[in-house]
Length: 110
Image (cartoon, rainbow, N blue to C red; front, top):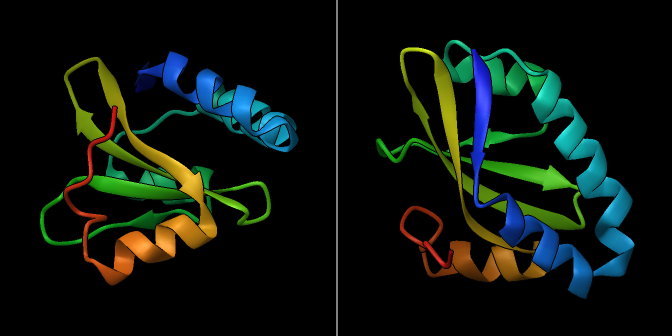
Protein backbone atom coordinates (compact mmCIF):
# COMPACT_ATOMS: atom_id res chain seq x y z
CA UNK A 1 0.00 0.00 0.00
CA UNK A 2 1.07 3.56 -0.60
CA UNK A 3 2.09 5.79 2.30
CA UNK A 4 0.13 8.89 3.27
CA UNK A 5 2.56 11.10 5.18
CA UNK A 6 0.78 13.28 7.73
CA UNK A 7 2.60 16.45 8.83
CA UNK A 8 5.05 16.55 5.92
CA UNK A 9 5.23 20.31 6.53
CA UNK A 10 6.68 19.61 9.99
CA UNK A 11 9.63 17.81 8.43
CA UNK A 12 10.23 20.64 5.97
CA UNK A 13 10.16 23.18 8.80
CA UNK A 14 12.67 21.12 10.78
CA UNK A 15 14.99 20.92 7.77
CA UNK A 16 14.95 24.72 7.44
CA UNK A 17 16.53 24.93 10.88
CA UNK A 18 18.98 22.08 10.20
CA UNK A 19 20.38 22.90 6.75
CA UNK A 20 22.86 20.00 6.83
CA UNK A 21 19.95 17.56 7.08
CA UNK A 22 18.29 18.58 3.80
CA UNK A 23 19.75 15.93 1.49
CA UNK A 24 19.19 13.18 4.07
CA UNK A 25 15.52 14.03 4.50
CA UNK A 26 15.10 14.36 0.72
CA UNK A 27 16.41 10.80 0.36
CA UNK A 28 13.98 9.65 3.08
CA UNK A 29 11.06 11.36 1.25
CA UNK A 30 12.02 9.68 -2.01
CA UNK A 31 12.04 6.24 -0.40
CA UNK A 32 8.63 6.90 1.19
CA UNK A 33 7.10 7.83 -2.18
CA UNK A 34 8.36 4.58 -3.69
CA UNK A 35 7.49 2.33 -0.75
CA UNK A 36 4.80 -0.34 -0.73
CA UNK A 37 3.92 -1.47 2.80
CA UNK A 38 1.36 -4.06 3.81
CA UNK A 39 2.67 -5.04 7.26
CA UNK A 40 5.01 -3.33 9.75
CA UNK A 41 7.94 -5.53 8.71
CA UNK A 42 7.77 -3.84 5.29
CA UNK A 43 8.93 -0.65 7.00
CA UNK A 44 12.11 -2.48 8.01
CA UNK A 45 12.55 -3.74 4.44
CA UNK A 46 12.43 -0.15 3.14
CA UNK A 47 14.55 1.31 5.96
CA UNK A 48 16.83 -1.38 7.35
CA UNK A 49 17.96 0.77 10.27
CA UNK A 50 14.42 1.67 11.36
CA UNK A 51 13.33 0.45 14.78
CA UNK A 52 9.76 -0.70 15.35
CA UNK A 53 8.89 0.25 18.92
CA UNK A 54 7.14 -2.34 21.02
CA UNK A 55 4.56 -1.97 23.79
CA UNK A 56 1.74 -1.78 21.23
CA UNK A 57 2.78 1.75 20.31
CA UNK A 58 2.56 1.34 16.50
CA UNK A 59 5.59 3.62 16.32
CA UNK A 60 8.74 3.50 14.27
CA UNK A 61 12.02 5.34 14.76
CA UNK A 62 13.81 6.30 11.57
CA UNK A 63 17.59 6.90 11.57
CA UNK A 64 18.23 9.71 9.13
CA UNK A 65 21.45 11.20 7.84
CA UNK A 66 23.81 8.46 8.94
CA UNK A 67 22.13 8.31 12.34
CA UNK A 68 22.62 12.06 12.96
CA UNK A 69 18.86 12.60 13.17
CA UNK A 70 15.98 10.56 14.48
CA UNK A 71 12.30 10.79 13.63
CA UNK A 72 9.51 9.03 15.52
CA UNK A 73 6.37 8.31 13.54
CA UNK A 74 3.13 6.55 14.41
CA UNK A 75 1.76 4.30 11.68
CA UNK A 76 -1.66 2.91 10.91
CA UNK A 77 -2.49 0.43 8.19
CA UNK A 78 -5.79 1.24 6.50
CA UNK A 79 -7.66 -0.51 3.71
CA UNK A 80 -6.00 1.42 0.88
CA UNK A 81 -2.99 3.20 2.38
CA UNK A 82 -0.68 3.43 5.33
CA UNK A 83 -0.94 6.59 7.41
CA UNK A 84 2.39 7.78 8.79
CA UNK A 85 2.11 10.51 11.45
CA UNK A 86 5.21 12.51 12.39
CA UNK A 87 5.39 12.62 16.19
CA UNK A 88 8.89 13.92 16.86
CA UNK A 89 12.11 14.93 15.06
CA UNK A 90 15.49 15.64 16.61
CA UNK A 91 19.15 14.82 16.81
CA UNK A 92 20.46 11.48 17.96
CA UNK A 93 21.49 13.04 21.29
CA UNK A 94 18.00 14.48 21.80
CA UNK A 95 16.52 11.06 21.05
CA UNK A 96 18.78 9.45 23.64
CA UNK A 97 17.40 11.91 26.20
CA UNK A 98 13.83 10.85 25.27
CA UNK A 99 14.78 7.21 25.71
CA UNK A 100 16.32 7.86 29.11
CA UNK A 101 12.97 9.34 30.16
CA UNK A 102 11.08 6.51 28.32
CA UNK A 103 9.11 9.13 26.37
CA UNK A 104 9.73 7.65 22.92
CA UNK A 105 6.46 5.71 23.29
CA UNK A 106 4.32 8.74 24.08
CA UNK A 107 5.96 11.90 22.69
CA UNK A 108 3.75 13.76 20.23
CA UNK A 109 5.23 17.20 19.59
CA UNK A 110 3.44 17.81 16.29
